[in-house]
Length: 162
Image (tube, rainbow, N blue to C red):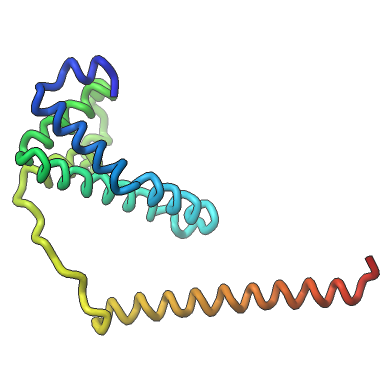
């Protein structure tokens, strides 16, 4: 946060922005983002996951900040102001006709009704079973790869004099 940003925000908006940042710190969002960055570097198919997790972490912090200060509208104004101050007013381009970026989507979500609180779906649902199946398959694959690597090292060690 810069001095220019803090000067542009009203006191309630400043409280909202600080509450938002406190949520990031308390929930350790940096760890989620780092894990996704590492996974995306290891597996290029996971690259789209980076933006999804970053957006989800921001929305999480938005909702918690709104709950903490008691006003979704104030958090939306603070986010919009922070985006404009940090980037300046964007020049009109054809890209403006494309889908809205993360900041307008976050502001729109805050100006709408709060999300319904949902319990975790049961494990026996099709999504739950698919997730457990994928996790089990990944674990078996990792163990198989580790076993193959150890076997290869032992074979090479036995075949070559060191």
